Image (cartoon, rainbow, N blue to C red; front, top):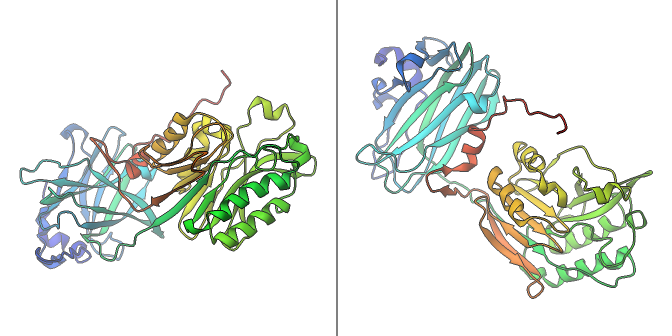
Length: 435
């Protein structure tokens, strides 16, 4: 199905193709309207396509797709031949949807990069929902074009919904100029103090080591779980304290000296309740926030600790992060909940645990993970599971650059940063009954 040019004139006034030399600059007026066509995997499951003359975001024409059954799937498709291989491109579109429960799954915008033979040169790239404007929401994606690509096939589609409609408008595609680099220098410490006589003395061991490494110029530093109890033989209750309190005050001083965020685990007292807590101090030494360990092992709740019940994420000057503690890594929910809230890196103060699961949490949520431990690897893991750096007794501080804007293309799978959330099934209820 092709749509006559006259009916799409209003829609494509918002469609700019800004491409630099040697490619020509493409604008709405010289982009053929008839290039847009409809697509479905099979005719029998094709949704209904039409153009709404004044249904766009600004009252102009817009592309509409309507589906009756969940089995239906299809979209509007066009191809752009003038691209710049190897360069960053931005794809953006606005949509208005009705009767769709999970936009991330059902509203589909993607780029397929093609070679001279019209073959895919890597797995498709998905644009993900972002900002909103009333009933309209934007999907966008900035990604490098493969060096083998000569064309980009754009698809605006719908699927996996019943009696649903999506209207597409304000579509743009072209070179992404002035793309900022988001590089975070993270550090983690491997240290196990022994023979200390107080919580303060144990904490001081970590601070002195970190201060000795101040030339590392970190953006964020991770210390282990329970830095107030390690090495001194005291009970959780004996070292428990308020937050803010003496330990956060000392960590704040460290953060100011390093001009770095600092993450560390301690034991927080609130009345008669004691939590295993991770704190985040800002570069200015002030408390940014805290996370209370949600998954307690039997040894901890039998020792009188109580679990937390929230999965907060924290805004820093380089992006959103999440905190987990030790036994949390045994379960998928904490990391998944924080990643769903936008955390791009997870920091894990941990006594000891499964290195495989720590790497799995990074891979399955496509986030960086930084652990600081006593009895397992103290390491920094990339979203594809690669270990970027590891601390040891010989080299107690490990550092690595977290390139938050980097696209990691996995063989056959493509960029999992957006694909992970596109193909997730939040619509299926999870059984909560005890086994």
